[in-house]
Length: 149
Image (tube, rainbow, N blue to C red; front, side, top):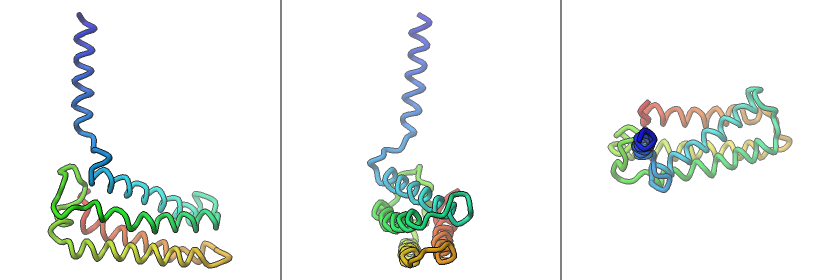
C-alpha cells in the first residue's frame, strides 16, 4: 500500500513538473533554443578574446559565421501577439514592434560586420575585439529594452 501511495505521489509530482516545461516545437521553445545557442557561441568567442579559451583563428571565424546565421533566426518565432506567459520577453516586444525589429536588424548588421572582420587574414584578436563588443552591445540594448529579468 505504501509503495502505491509513493508511486502515485511521484507520478503526480512529475505531471506537475512536466506541465511547466516549454514545448520545444512552440514559438517560445524555438526562439529560446536559438537564443541559448547564440549565448553559447558568443561566450566562446568572448572567451577566446578574454583569455578563458585559446584564440584559434579558424574556430573564431567559424563561430562568428555561426553567430551571424543564428542572429537572423529567432525573430520569426515572435508572433504578432504574445503567445506564452512564460516568455522572458516584456509585453513591449509586442507593443513596440518597430523598435524591436530595429534592434533585431542592428544585431544582424553587427554580426555581419563581425564575420567580415573575422575573414581578414591573418586573423588576430585585435581585429575582432571591437566588432564582437558591438555585437554584445546590440544584445544588451535589446535585453535592456525588451527582456523581463
